[in-house]
Amino acid sequence: QVHLVESGGGLVQAGGSLKLSCAASGRTISNYVMGWFRQAPGKEREFVAAINWSGGSIYVSDSVKGRFSISRDNTENTVSLQMNSPEPEDTAVYYCAVKSGGLLFANSARRYDYWGQGTQVTVSS
Image (tube, rainbow, N blue to C red):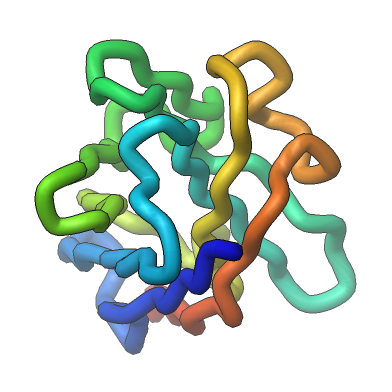
């Protein structure tokens, strides 16, 4: 069992920056893919980014490529999402999640085994 807790959400102005963190407990996450998803009101959960167990491979959605980056620290059992130049369209609840295996299908929410409770990010124009 893996317990995930996101933090760092809040209100940010468009063009600013915000860093989300996700802390894992219950089991080491060093062997898992870590992903970030988001869900806006009335929309389906959307893939944002994922990172493999070593941090050497990253998969980022086209909608945030060049603006958001993902990183992990296996010694601290954490994964982060650095949000640069966010836009109002990035407003959503952001979730971190864990899946076994590699980055194949890492953009599919169904492939993930554990989820955090989410943290709200609101981008003002």
